[in-house]
Amino acid sequence: MIQPNLDLLGRILRHTDRIYSHLENATNAVAGILIFALMCFGGTRIVFRIFDIPLYGFIDIVELSMVGFAVLSIAFVQRLGGHVRMELILTALKGRWLWFAEVVGSLLALFIVGILIPSSYSHFHRAFEFGDSTMDIELVNWPAKLVVPIALVILFGRLVIQTVGYLRLLLRPSYEPVAVPVIQTIEDKARSEAALTDRQPT
Image (cartoon, rainbow, N blue to C red; front, top):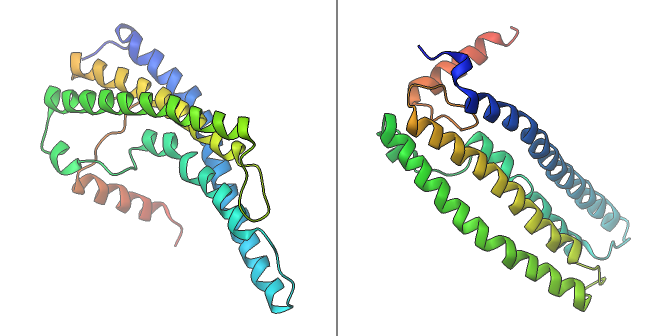
C-alpha cells in the first residue's frame, strides 16, 4: 500500500493539473462560443436572404472563426484522452509496458508540437507585418493566425504534465494515475454508462 505522504510528485501533479485545467476549460468554452456565434450568424444570413438583404463577408468570417474552434479545444481534448488513439494496441499492454508506450507517444507529440509552435508563430508574424487580410471584406487575419501558436503552447504544457505523469507511473506502476487519461476497457465503459443511466431521474 502506497503511503500518501510519500507520493510528493503525485500531489504536485494533481495540483498542477487542477490549475491548468481551468485554462483548458476556458479556451474550450471560447471555442464553443465561436461555434454558437457562427451558427447564429449563419441562421441570420439565411433569414436576411429571404428578405433579399445580403450579409457580406460570411465566407471570410467562417474562415477566421473556424481557426479558433478547430485548435482552442486541442489541450482540453488531450487532457480527457478524447482524441484518436491507438487504443487497440494500448489496451493489450499492462503495467510498465503500457506506461512506456505512453511516455514514447507523449515525447513524440512534444517533439512535433515543439516544431509547430515556432512555425505557426512565423506564419502569424508574416501576416502581422504585411497586414494580410481576407479576400472579400478585407478583415485582418493575423488575430486568427495568432490563435494557433497560443493553442499549441497550451497543448505543449498539457503534454509536459502528462509526460511527467506517465514517467511517474513508469517508475512506480502501483501508484494511482494522476494527470493522465486512463484507458477504459469495453466493460469499464459499459459500467460507466450504466451508472450514469441509473443516476438519471425517471
